Length: 298
Image 1 (cartoon, helix red, strand yellow):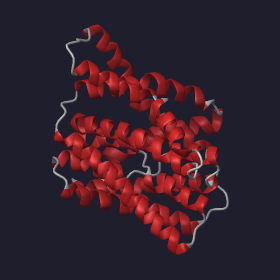
Image 2 (cartoon, rainbow, N blue to C red):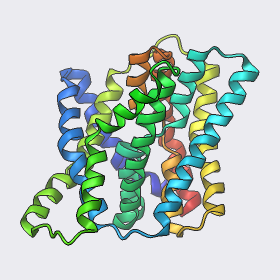
Image 3 (cartoon, helix red, strand yellow):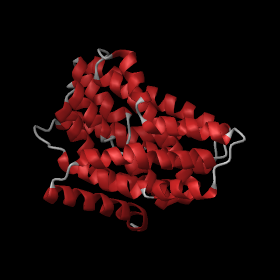
Image 4 (cartoon, rainbow, N blue to C red):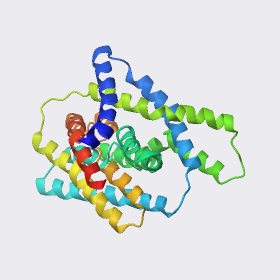
């Protein structure tokens, strides 16, 4: 219970503030999400990658992400074949289980649980997951109809992608960023996490749940909240990395379904009601499962 009150409850309360605000005020979320995507998140990503000390652990993080993704994809493919699910349902299940909310949920949890050192890993993993989700998420949401071109186009439209590229170019060049300019970047970047936490609460308030398919929801919740961190733990045992990074990746893998997947499901008609239901239910259940995972790790 101590971990719940010290780590999870502060995060949940911020989500709840956004949820209640949206229920009563019905604000336009797109404007806030645009500010986060085009200004705040790039500043946080730039600062993180500019100041990061790169080593083999970041290669291991990339390998970890790829192996975790394909492990979950394989499980879904097997289940879909055995259960004889149609393509749209299979795509909806992949969207709900393969992509976790490592950003506006996972990052603040890691910050409270593991401090600034863990938070650096979390932001790096968040950027990597965003690229993976924009590529594979679009591909599976469109059931292959959109093709690789749209997936690549989506990745290239994401400002954080360019923030990473610019940060790395400057970091490994003789260019020095003036301290006052870096202070401005840090000021905006520091405001990103609380803002995206409120934004997630607002997004959850807009999810409409109807005709719950508890069989599929139970399967997705089990895979997302239980199997995923177990697979992550196995990968961290096999791959050489520090204990801190391993713990951050395991907790990140234990996060509920990413809210962004609902948008993809709606856009490409990949069972949006099912995906929305799984996103909401896994987020609610995670209030219990995340403290359990943190207790095991710490």
